Length: 336
Image (cartoon, rainbow, N blue to C red; front, side, top):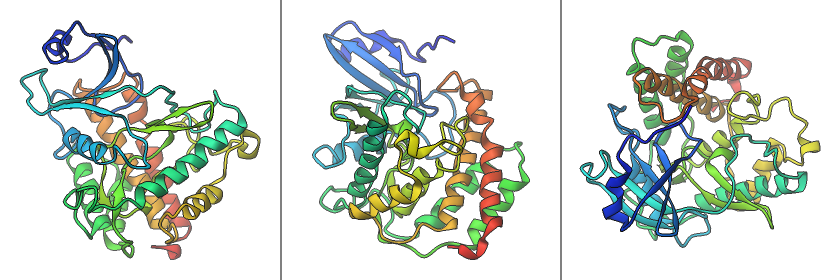
């Protein structure tokens, strides 16, 4: 399926000062993203999708703001070019950033790399996540980027309401999970910047040496509990390869990949949040992903999908809900 832009590319020519060539970024299910070439520069455009969206979703202004704050930090992010809030220019707000050389893989096992390279990239991901969680929020000017407390209370409320807004879709397991999370909130950890979707598919990896060259897709970033990011990355250890490129069932030592315990240990050694990752955190990551997938299906039904495989990704929602339920059912005494 050939992707076509939901805006007229010539509208960018006055902005960039020359003829524009577009090509689609083949990954991502939320904000439409395009490679842009103009006057010998290779850029990336991120925009809000056309059509109605769930309230507070697709917040590219927040995405731009946190990337701008992290420009000179130990967290590698793209160099920003401009933010255009006026929808009159191309139909929705958008921003432009420089294109980082490297590769994005939706497969967490990084099949194009050698075992040593895979290990280096994954451990670098642990170190970068710890670096993110130890950034000085005040010094970065992000003290009002989110609330200083009550992160999981707000997250449960947000994702339950987003699920409820997707009527007439029905799933009794998701209903019950939302109720359980609301009644079993965990203790709070010190507030940090939270990426919100930290996974292998949202980083650019490079070689010579193998490392992470850039962290992408900050749409869901906020201030909150750092264990949310750790739980989100750890979620992929329990997912199968067909479930968004998970690792379950693969021979991690043969692939050169750290297991979940080693990844978390590397995160802790780099200064990440020392609190234990509990069943609540792990199950909630799955619940939230199920709701996100349901939202992808809803956008596909409405004709506003950002990617050609939106329906196949959206169809994973029931499986994520079952995994969350099974995790809680196996040992609710391990909560929070």
